[in-house]
Amino acid sequence: MGLLPTPPAFLSQLAEAAGRLPQPVRATLWMILACLLFAILNAFIREASRALHPLQAVFFRNLFGLVFMLPWIHKAGLEALTLPRIRLYLGRTTVGLLSMFAWFWALKLLPFADAIALSFASPLFATMLAALFLGEQVRARRWTAIMVGFAGVLVILRPGADAVSAGALFALASSALGAMGIIFTKQLARSESTSAVVTIMVLIMTPMSLVPALFVWQWPPASLWPLLLTMGFAGSMGHMSFVRALRLADASSLMPYDYARLVFAAAIGWIFFAEVPDGWTWLGSAIIAAAAVYIARREARIDALPAAALASGLPDEPTVPSPRIATKLRAGR
Image 1 (cartoon, rainbow, N blue to C red):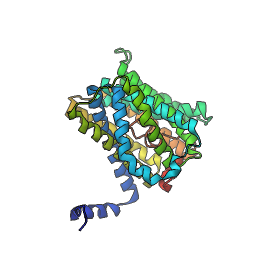
Image 2: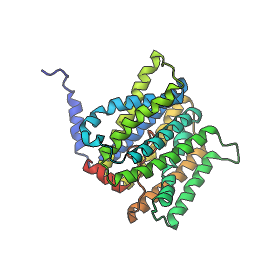
Image 3: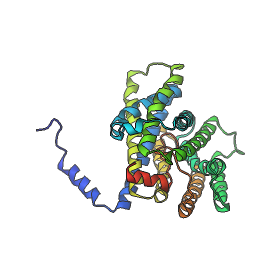
């Protein structure tokens, strides 16, 4: 008899039944699960950022995320630990960390669903930056879609009705920085394996995030440790579910399901934070989503996609990558 109990029969039957589902259905289910896990993670981030300084909350998110990713890092092997392009890795990690800091502040200050809605702007920034810095050709249709998408951002912010809040600025800064990370990731993906990019980023980001946390350090109360631990677990499981989805289906076909995050965020905000998104948030989100999905489908058709950050365009947000990177994921690289 082994040390671990035998799983109940119904779990084995459930896994077997899931394996018989068509591949696109399984990909969709993995994507929706990733969106749910990221929505839960962001709720934990919000609570942690209110109990601790956000700089410290970022460190614990990275620390416990690293703990739960150790099996993946071990499986990646020593190949993932080489640093042939250290400057690109440091640049990618730096903008990713800054994006994470801004995101934690946004979740602390904004209504929950509003923060998630504004995070959808990241693919719009990414397309612009790919044109400006990588020389990718963006024609009139996609520029029009980008402008429509940012019109959706304005619908959410309603700048004429009220002053734009600090939380909204943090959310947009996080989206823009996340898009810069996408550019670094695209350059890395030309020569580096997926396991190398993910592993090295995690290993660098954890000690980097400790440095600013030390300036505001206070030991979390005992009641907060389970939340911090669960935060790392939800983030790691979310990323793994996201990668599993990308191994089963094209990125452009998964992108519409990414916006399930807003539905989950609205439900969590209503149940746990007594927040209800207004009609402007839903309308603006729909406009941004339509523009981003159009851009992704258009780019997939002409094979000129900007690459999204591997497993995290925004910190803890599943930004769907280009088919080129998704192909690497499906190949297990």
